[in-house]
Length: 537
Image (cartoon, rainbow, N blue to C red; front, side, top):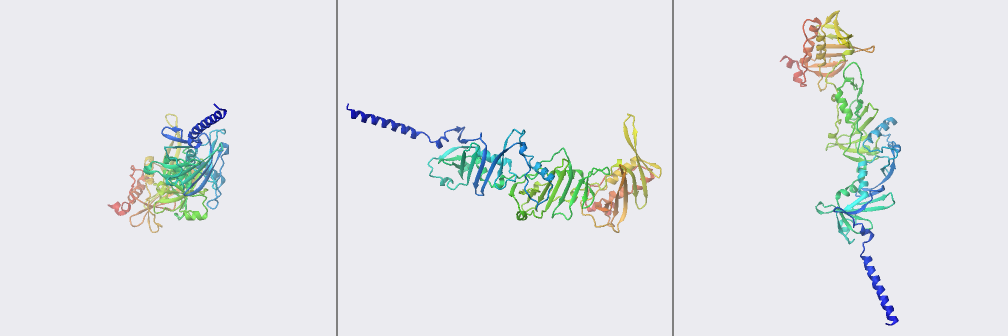
């Protein structure tokens, strides 16, 4: 073979080898196509960056654009970052710290200074609390993405799948410096999922809608809708107050821990009243642990407050607990759908929620009042006076510490009238009957002028050398209705029949000749049962 012919053959062989190699190379998947080669069960793994922190997330959808920035912290990094909202309410730093502590109760904090957790803030709203549940969900979907199938590989049908103008564009920056950009397209027919594309990859994928739903939400849903933190059941309510446009006068109730009556809670405004302990506790604790349905506005200014009816709130309710935490809530008047706008004092986040979920909404004075108008603490009573139209008596009550047969100290209580011993059983039954004179939940009359006094009972107290008295009076108004008055304050109507039966016991009590029975108190608040005519019947 000639030398030239050998060269030509060798060259052709080289070309053939190179051509074959090129065919092999061209047949290999591209780097972007390799992403589809890994399957997880029936899913196609697009990427898995769960080992990395997400340092930045930018979301753009129909509601606008927002950006979350992540930072790490330990326990020592936690600080109070309440926004300046002095136009809403001037709060002491102690109260603000307490409220911030309550609103963070739901968070899972690092257990040791060495344990690190990612926390996210939203650009322009860095002082506002974001929902940890929502940011965790957003991060989780950015960290990992898998498809159920590849729908199109041509890269020429983006418009057909809603990817030419995506419903949402999501860009995530990871702790290793890498980035991922997702484009969210239309919903697939028959609820099969949502179309998705990854930047620099022309494939169109079908993914489960649950993996991308969070990218389609309004940024407001990223904010924390918790209004108040949970109540610490190791403590009790110390004070509650209600004010706002709903009330002519503020309602203020405090825990006085007195030894005068069994009502621990006393209403001091609009007038002094004994309150039902359970009702006050229930109201106070209901102000804790409130989560609204949705967030309506962030960084609310005066115009925004006015828009949502919170510039002059319909209700302002607050509670103080024994652990020195406090909550204060502003609420608007309910709309026609039964929803109101609500916010915690010191916050600038306005939320919307159903009033049916707020046990305290539109609470009234009568909701707190004790059924018993007077309920004396007998260990502190040293005297009692009883007056009717026929009799006026003053009793001495004596408490003596004695040793019983088991060598135990007990208190023996005795009663006397003008030096005569009076049956303590009768005294006890009479006092219990007086305690049974209960108020109605109806509007009391304006005065008792012109009414006839039916019964007056005064209890004299001695608490650590300090003496005081409570006086209950019952009047008949001439229409057969009985009106109860405590210490000069008109409490309301009370069953006339029961009051008259109690008043009739005044004389046998002083005579000390017959046993005084316990009466069954009436629980009927109708006018007919309260009237003298009903009693006569």
